[in-house]
Amino acid sequence: MSFKLLGLRDELVKATESLGFQSPMPIQQKAMPVLLSGEKDFVGLAQTGTGKTGAFGLPLIQLIDSNKSHTQGIVICPTRELCLQITDDLKQFARYMNKIKIVAIYGGASILTQIKQLKSKPQIIVATPGRLIDMIKRKAANLSKVSYTILDEADEMLNMGFQEDIDNILKKMPDHRKTWLFSATMPKGVAAIARNYLTDPVEVRVGSKRQGPKNIKHICHTIQQKNKYQGLKRIIDFSPDILGLIFCRTRKDTQALSELLMQDGYQAEALHGDLSQAQRDSVMRKFRRGSVRILVATDVAARGLDVDDITHVIHYNLPDEIEIYTHRSGRTGRVGKSGLSIVLVNSKEISRIRMLEKRFNICFEFNKVPDGKAICEKQLSGLVEKIVHTDVNQAEIEAYLPAVCSALENFDKEELIKRFIAAEFNRFFQNYHNADDINANTKIRAKTRSESKNRHGSKNRHESKNRRESRAKTKPVKRKKRLESGKTQKLFINVGRLDKINKGAIVRLICDKSGVGSGMIGEISLNREFSFFEVEKQAARKVRNSLNNAKLDGRTVQVHKAIQKNAAH
Image 1 (spheres, helix red, strand yellow):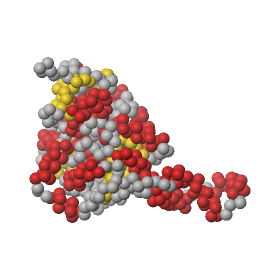
Image 2 (spheres, one colour; image 1 turned 180 degrees about the vertical axis):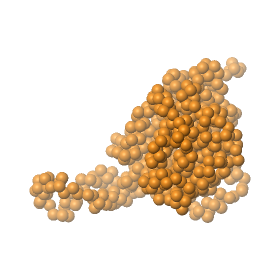
Image 3 (cartoon, one colour; image 1 turned 90 degrees about the horizontal axis):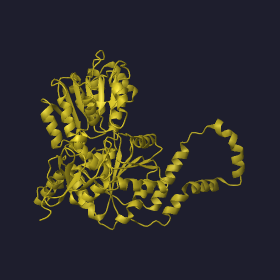
C-alpha cells in the first residue's frame, strides 16, 4: 500500500516521500480513504505514536481550498507542546502547497502576536481549547465557515478538564461541518462527545480495546523502597544510549529526583507545572537534540509531549489512575519503533502490576536489576562500539598527533587500551566494584501470555470486584462526581465566576500543582467570587499546601478547609 493509492494529491505524496514515509501506517490506511471523501464524521481509536497526525493532517490539507482566505479547518489538542508539534507536521505536509496558511494558537505566548497571525486569514488553525475560547471572545477567531474540525487526544483533553471548553467551541461552529475525533481510549466522556456532536460517524480502531502497542516491552523490577534510586541509576547505566522519560507522581518528587541525577553526573532535567513556558521550551529543546538524555516528569506536564525517539519510559512511581499507565508507556515505541516500559515496584505493589496485565492484556517480564559486572560490560561494549564507528578528521587532527604520540610512546598497545578504559570507566568501576544485590527477595512467577489471557477472561467474584474498582478509577472525572461518603474533604478556593474561570481550570490547577489525579477530585461548586471543591481526604493536605499562593490566570490562589455548617454540633 502506498500513499498514492490512498488517493493523495501528487504534492502531498511528494511531501511524504521527502519526509521519509515509505508506506502508510495502519491507522492511516484505515482512516484516510474515509476522510479524503470529506463526507463523513469519523472516530479514530489508536494509541499515541501510531501516525494519527498524518491520518487526519494529510486529508485535511487536501480538502482545504487554498483560494479561499477564511478558516476552513480547526485542530483542537490538549497542550501547547502537542499544538506546536501538530502545526509543524501540517506545515511539513503542505510544504509543496504554498498558498495554505497554518497558525498555532496556544496559551503561554503573546496573545497580541497570535491575534496578528489570525488576521492573516489562515485556512487551518491548530489550537488548545482555553486560548481558542479567548480568541473567540475577542472576535479574533471566526469559526462560522469551518468545514472540518479535528479533536486530537480527546481523552487527554477530558482528563485535563476541558469538557466545558470543547462543548462551547463546538457550539460556535456550523452544523454542516464534519468532525473527526481521535483518541487513545473511549471513556464515557469521549463517547458522549461523539454521540452529541457527530452524525453517524465511521469508527476505526487500531489494536484491541484494552491492548497497548505490541512493539513495547513491559519490564518490572521488584526492589525494596530504600533501594529505588540505586535501582534507577543501574537501569540508566545499563543503557548507554538511553533517551528516557521518568515519571514521578508530584512536581516536588520530580524536581528532587532530577537534582539527584544531575548531582550524580547524569544529563537530566525536570519537567513539571512550576516551570515557566520559557523554561519548559528550553528543557524540551535540550531533550530533542540529545544534550539532555533523561527527562523527569509529572503526568500532567508530559501530556501532549511528542518525541519519536524516546527509548525508555521508566515508572519511578506507579500512577494513581491505572489508565494513565498506557499514556505513559505510549511515549516510547512510537512510529513503529520498539521501546521499553520499565516499572520499579516494591513487593506490596505486585498486585497492581497484575491488575495492569489483566486490564490492558499485556505481559510483564519480571527481571532483576542489572548487577555491577553486567553494567560495566554493557558500558564498555558501548564505548568500544563508539570508538569503532567514530569518523576521524585526519586534516584537523594531524597537527596534534606528534605531541600526543611523543607523550604515549613508552606504552605498548595493551597498556594504552587499559589506561583509556580506566580513564573513561573509573566512575563505573568505583560505583559497582562491590555493588550489592538490591533486588527484593520476592518469588514472582512470570505469567505466560496464555495464562494472562485466561486470567483476563475469568468471571469469579473477586476479579469482578477488581475490574469494577479499576474501571471506577479510570473513568474521566465528572464535575458532579461524588466520592465515597466520609472519605472526602471540602476545600474553599478564592476564585469564582468573576475571575472568568470554569471547573476545568480548577481541575487542571489541582492536577498540575499537586500531582493529584483527576479521579481523586469530586464535586466542584462555582460561586460568584469563590468556589468549593471536594478531594479525597488522603490528598487534601497535599492539595492545600500545593495550591496556596499558586497563580491561576494571574491571580494568587488561597485554599483552605471549608467551614461545615454542622461543625458546631
